[in-house]
Length: 150
Image (spheres, rainbow, N blue to C red):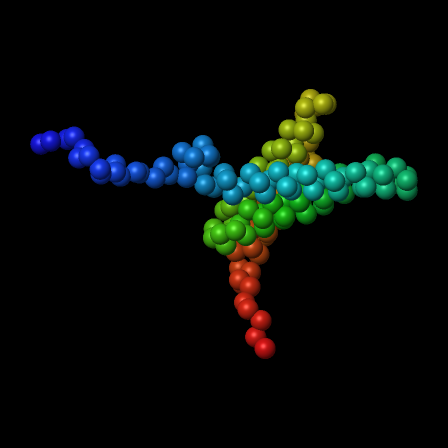
């Protein structure tokens, strides 16, 4: 067999898979931007919350409850934004996005203090997973935009 190319013919180009172009798994490319956006929203929501706590002189026992509610809201956003582009696999992708956001929040909260994690971390985990799964389900089941019917 003659393996040489004939002059004037082009070699067939093979397309590289999407993973080779970016180095990320397609699922990670869906989850990471949603987690980064949600972490930014989490930080931006905590700033006015901290100012409100200092201004109103709220009791310290209320602080974990407020942080857990803000974290659950941002986990809902992470689940929604990670599933919305494809509208597939709502629950598992929403749970993965919420779990990744939980790890980011937990790591950033633990690093300065390095104290043992308590029951609040477990409540935070379950509330974020529940909200992230719900956000994924909402995004997967939301109907596509239809044209205006006049």
